[in-house]
Length: 326
Image (tube, rainbow, N blue to C red; front, side, top):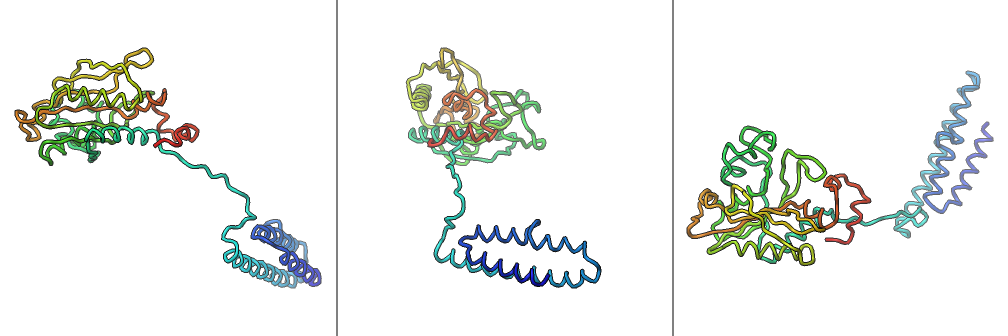
């Protein structure tokens, strides 16, 4: 047996001399020390030996195993040193297919919208997502009896704390902490109790607010008409349809003619005098307009996406279609 082990060690030395890569050493290690390697098989054969033979063979096998491990470790160390000095990259390893990622379509749409509005003088402002009822409802002229404050429509954290239902709360905080004139946009996440192919409990919204002297509805129409044209990259048939929002008066919804049908894309209006009073701005000296739109809605229209849930499924085949867009 000792003679066979001596032969085995000699054979191992010769194989290690011929190794040219870490990959080859790993194969040799597996061949000798792996689960089904030569040394492991020799240990398994001990069960067939007598008690007296087991003592002698076990001792010899332990010596063999240590020798094999030492020889392989030495070769591995030498190969690693050579690799570090001469070969920063092991060229013998198989190649890897590396593909570049892409921005998420929601991020792309937000960047496009803020870039356009930024050219019109709007400054981006962000705020907290867990709000109190004053900033989310009361300051925006939404009374206790308004249906939007129902538990079925709003995620309440506590009696007076909720996940904001719109980024209008950021507008309120901005008007309270800054003097007029003011021109801001407020991109961010909002939350509502709704879920279907075109609605999500969490979605993204951006609102615009302009407060200054002598602001009127014509300023609002001009900004939004130019914005729609620039965002879609072509002239769009647009209409302003009368509507109702507690925080604007007059209020309107902007519709676009899309594939032969009118589609509502955003709400807008002149800031209600009550809202200006709530944020300590004199509505006799200042007026303003505001508008709000859903990021996902515009992204679905621009990129022909039929199911809003695709934005959140992390499907690589879907997301990879947006490579190159910023």
